Image (cartoon, rainbow, N blue to C red; front, side):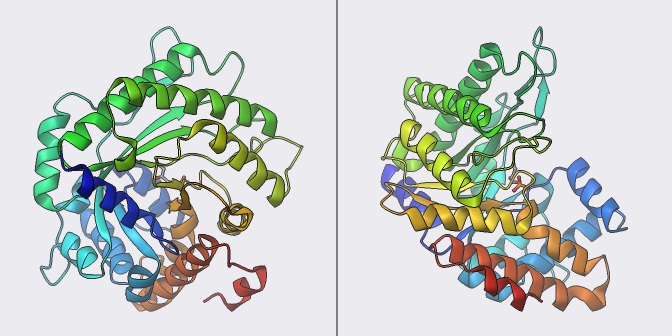
Length: 341
Ligand code: 13P
């Protein structure tokens, strides 16, 4: 393990003004996204779409620090034969890879899951490093509901995240540690805060037990928001303040950076929340984005599978990447949204 290199990579992933593009949708998730825009989910269409994103030079060079890929994509080449990984690396962004095998039902814990994928992970990480990946992602999912989450689910997921993170560091790959507390449901913001605090405390305990070096990690958490069916909405400032409060209680300052998931927030909410947090300032870690939907919804809609829309889709992606890049510096303003493509 080269800790100095791991730390440099983690710092580069959360470099001020830049964030991560999560383009690692599994085959079933990308099919859902393509269904919504009337595009058939074939390997060629998935390649064309992702190539469009990675060739968005303005976004990639100026606002994107790294890209999380799915197994299929890290092995794919562009239309002209250039490996997609090369296109990404040539923009200065770092290629990364999703390595978990998805959330599977947890026995005796109705409605809860544990993320699988540890078997054979050491060998797969070696393979991915050879293909150019310098960081990885593993997503644990925690659901809030009646009698949920259970300690069984929190512990099993935190333990798996720590086992994964240790294997990554052994392979000189920075682990993105992603414990996502879902925003699905009618719970209030206080419940999200309490559950997230519990989950993060357990995650950092397990990372310690597995000897993971925090300087070579990036955390990818949810923000503290009310459930999407809750009638009590929260202001941008409340989300920012509560999120910072929970992170300060749980995340050691040895962690170089935190890159949030968007989790189903609207594009502008995700940007405004990140911006408000960075405005608070005086934080021990960098705060940036690692968005999937909040970066890709606009370009997907603009593209809609048509060649003649590629430039418009790239403009839409660049716009969202720029807005989030500004939010990562606390320099975003609502008025800037009007200049959208
Ligand atoms: P969203 O930003 O769409 O939540 O996706 C980020 C991600 O990578 C989830 O694992």
